[in-house]
Image (cartoon, rainbow, N blue to C red; front, side):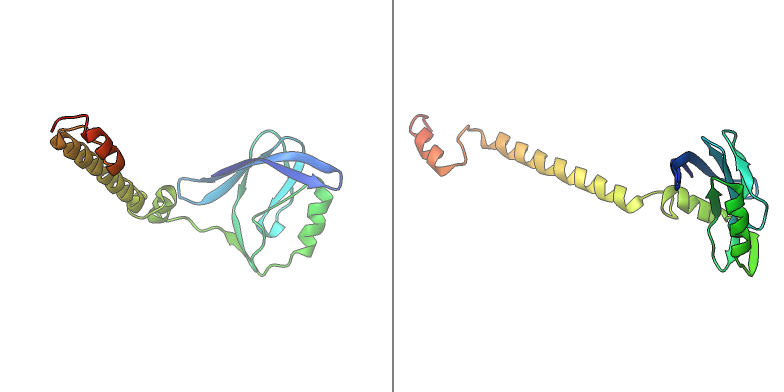
Length: 165
């Protein structure tokens, strides 16, 4: 999953745009790859580590879970702001985000545990088949009818005198 072009604001307006990629390593543990159009600073959940300088080259940061719940990333245009924030945040527990199970990853990729939006596609298939069956029935009935007389009673009376039956 990724987010790009996310504007970062300060009291001076937009100070840069951000790109955040959320990836999984070989153990299915999530991590961030963060880059910025301008120089910004970032620290991970709980902000216990020192702020990291962001630039155009992606920087890897771990996803941390805190208790009580805090933001996953803190982003600011100045290092001093994050250092003040680090002293202001009080968390009792900080740990790395747990690894995802294969079933959970598959469910996020496809939307269902069965591997797809099965109900939706079954409904679409049934609707298409039903539509074609109705059209085929109408065409067959018209073919069997054999004449060109319209269904409208007014037109039927009008044209019936012109055609021999």
